[in-house]
Image 1: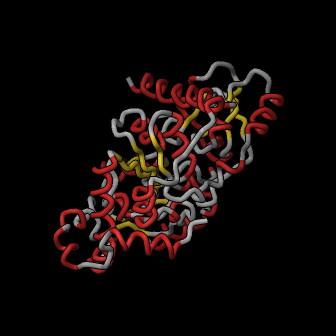
Image 2: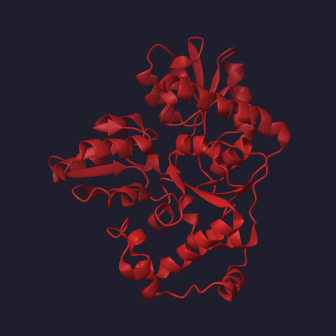
Length: 350
């Protein structure tokens, strides 16, 4: 386990990390991308870490891939590429830097390593897991195959390398319906998110979609009544739900999509008031670019995503620790499943 006191002592011995209003003002252009949600006083605390990380990235030939659920100081301050799971998976195949720092949860870092076996992939906190990834194993995939012989297995990218390796193809919330529709046969197995699978089943009625009993601890907390209550309090409110929410919640929403889909919808429609039924950082990261839009709650914080901090990113780059490794025997079939997803997504978009 990381000795936090020793880590902080080591970092302060090498970098000036004291809050600095002078540095905060000098980095005002970066702060402008988040000043609606990050005060100048808070930015004075973050700015020294952002400056140190960005300097180390150049020294280490490193890039930062950050998920849309990262806090604003990471998303806007140090990320070279941001996006949803599909976008980050594609970016991971395109980066030229030798080092990738994954600001997200562990399965995302594994995916980057699977796609870049010769590169160093750093995970700032190895404990940043995922309730979905933990809900399914390769043995669970075998159980589903035995129950539905011949049915292809489409596994959410929110899974371990072992589960990806046991699957036929991966999907994300952005492409799940298209991937399922493209599968051969009448029955398709989806793992591990039962709510995503049920929402996809409504979009692809020509397929019999069967699923594993997993769920996201963030999105399963929302209820249809939450949405109805907010509509009654704010007439005209537009509600956008992530497809990891239960179908009854999605049915109450005006739109449902992946994090990239959510962002695109809000940028296109620009409603006066909107509620994003997903992880809280999503609204924080796009609010400054949409000053005319008022973002309302509720939202739920992902405890795993919040484990990634500027301090831990700086430590991983300073020490080059937290390298993710995947057994080559697992990585090869896992790579095929992820690459099939990427290739099919590009083909369907063409």
